[in-house]
Image (cartoon, rainbow, N blue to C red; front, top):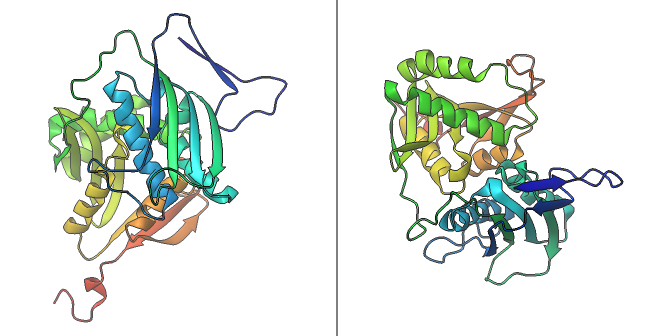
Length: 301
């Protein structure tokens, strides 16, 4: 249905294609620019292009969902960023890439502009997408709110599937140390039964998962189609409630959007390694968060 084309005579583009071709008769959706506003029209991420980009991607998912499509069927995008700094444009593109939008890879143009339509707006994305024949627009276009709850043993398969989908979308360059079946076995036999596992559930489906192992936030993964909807923020807030004195976590150095996410929530990078101690042999970084109360003398008795 969609053919991604990279012209052999041109420099290979990073994470996008030179052209996308769709078959004659294919239904296309031409989406208005996705903007960083919440459901009440309030700006999200004032002064922060990365946070705005995350919201824009989340809103773009909703636009696609309303017409029966998704990020995987996006043919082309234009990404507008209010900045003349290449580093800022690159940071926004990293959000686009981490979202799975560029997994096609689709055709895209990244532009720095002087201003956009809403006060304080720094990012906007327009898109054209294929609407699969089997798809039907969802009535009202809205998705149900996700509910956070403790995972039970029957959730293990769904938890593992979210982990696998999210890992594939967020870490395309990192080779997993275990097969899909081994991952599912690990979640079924070890993680869900013996570690504090939480899920985000929407309309009966698991769309996110978080695992706490003592004071370590050992896993936090979201279904790619549910990123940008605040579920990760809610999981981190929950983790802080469960571990009020402090939290630690490891993440790979290559996932810069994750670094910004955790730093936005008060985590500080305290250690970088070459990855020789993890199974993937991928350079990683350890983050820590400490509550202000934990730093007060005498806190905790």
